[in-house]
Image (tube, rainbow, N blue to C red; front, side, top):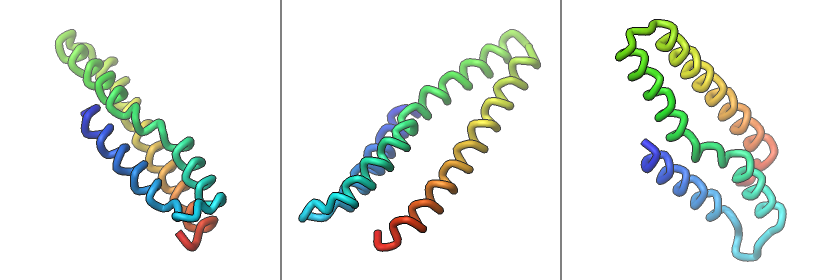
Length: 100
């Protein structure tokens, strides 16, 4: 999972980097830096997934329903925040950088 998310993130950064014009327009370069700084947390999706899987496997072996519920709540919270964050980022980029 970490390798897949790392590759996806690398592609994402490369695509954003390709938006920088050859004349190095500073506003576009600043936009790319801002998006990169705001989204570098995607690198840690693999780590989060491993932790959740560890909690679930431990819960199954220990037959502990509280751990399973905790893992489910953490996953739901992460997915909700991820979805909301991507929507807000998309709306911001669409409104601020109409030419990109």
